Image (cartoon, rainbow, N blue to C red; front, side, top):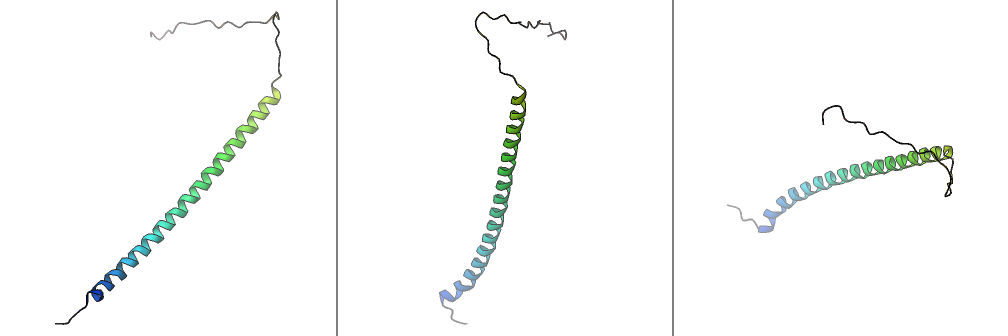
Length: 89
């Protein structure tokens, strides 16, 4: 029978534990990098969407003519007729 000190028994276990932690750290870093890439793409898509909406608003606003109405001006009032729902409800 061989005499073994307690720290000699724990050293191989620590080596295996450290290798597992390193693999886990690499996995975590890989996923963190992927999440950052996705976040960057999402922010780019949002900014492109906002830019598109701003351009559409500016194009529409160019065609709109501002009108001022004063009290006493005659205007046409559009009446929408309410139609019954013929589907039965």
